[in-house]
Image 1 (tube, rainbow, N blue to C red):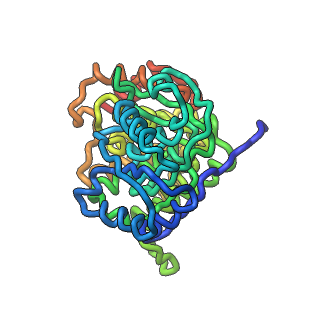
Image 2 (cartoon, rainbow, N blue to C red; image 1 turned 120 degrees about the vertical axis):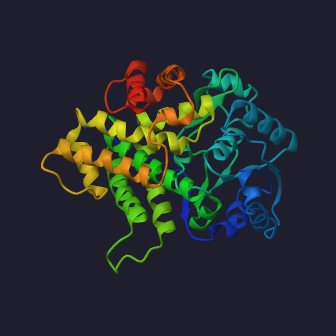
Length: 381
């Protein structure tokens, strides 16, 4: 077997009401912070709780929340310039994926002399990063475990993966009570996206015993979060199961790789600012069917862990898994086809090219090109 090397760099905390201890988690990393805050938290009344948690611990901070529908280099450059002029010592991120990626840019490139666009063009940081503390308001947060930042290049609207330092994030906090900031549809689509992250790590050519272990347990927890349990022995609240399963899915993805649905969802979000979880959820069943053509055993095995009833053959089991995801989306009145998102099939050609230009294309379930990705997009359209 090939050597397996994996380091879990952040200190991971999964705890209800952990948000109230944000100041405690941050204090050990400095005295002056930039707080990168999801602007949505202001509209739902959660921002004040976050800032109060910091103020109660005497943390000196200022807020950056000029973030649009996706993380882009323009917002990252503005945040980075403000951080440098303010002589901060560390960064705190509170929010979902786009907020965390902007905060990661600030931490990764704070001491660098080159611009964010140099790194978008392939430069690699040479300086040490600032400490970063993350409070995720969503159940999944794959970025904090990786050495890549997924961001939209504002010059082209294309997806770029920026190479950053290992162990960039020092502490990552998952607080299940923060899910109240999301709608039911948002929570559900993120749960399905988490299943997708775990499954695609399982199907990847880069899969290993660690990613398999975490993906299998993630599938079990996410299924319980979505469907509940008939056993009186399982009393863990749905929100906690969702965040535990999402955290494990994020770990599995970082130890293995993103797959076609996850990568294409990032590319669609970058170019058209459409919800990443929605896009991943739509494409996911088609990826299951695609992988079942040559990895039916792996797909069927993961379906078992997700609680799909056993069928006569692995191929039938895989198809039942894909149908199960579609049925869940239909039940929640979520889109089943990409054409429902007001994008054209012609526009999706550029999405396939964006995704194929990243180095994650090397770790797909099989050898893939932009043409292969476009075929999956067409089937999901």
